[in-house]
Image (tube, rainbow, N blue to C red; front, side):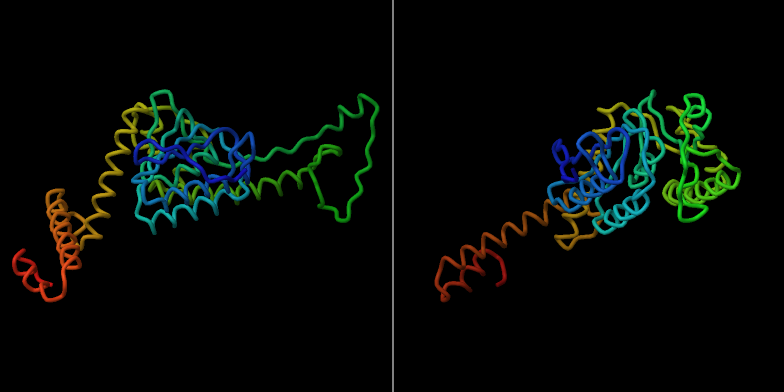
Length: 283
């Protein structure tokens, strides 16, 4: 179902994408809606410093994919929390579309990415049915209703109509990838939906580098640490690029203020000024 859960490793939230993807998650497969729910929950979890998108999927249906990916991209911008992706071992087609929510994408030497495009299959089973002596009558309310159903001969108009829809959806896919990976749409179209492994995927700019899983997790942990420091600095009123020593000094000062407040509350009001002067603080 669409239960928004994820694995935790320290401050990392590991959101997995496994197998063929449907519009909604099920018992045996992931879906665009369930992946979105997991990622959005992790983005809102204050104990998570970085999200790891662990992908091992050949892709799936278009339905619901673009909107779910864009919703997570927007949520990530709002939170400022990093997402790092890993093709473990493959992120193809709709699974690669999900990799577009990641700030960076890595893969092992044997990992693969790509298959950027859309596929639709029309079939004609009329000869098979004729050979076994079965005939069908297709009854429809309009001439274009349910063309390519397999029970009647395919015609070129039906193929052309399907091609137009595939081209439209593929164009949307190219735009999604182009915006995130900074690759021109024409260059993506020229890939012709091919899959690329390891170093070739990096060369084609479909991934950012080759790393082992352990090395990748270390990189994600560093990204999470950087995010937490930036967030802590902001809460303390410091600049976002404050050093760790500056952050620690601000925390120490804040702890002194808290200790003083507790001390003042423990005494009667007549001693408050005296206590403040004695500790070098101002109330």
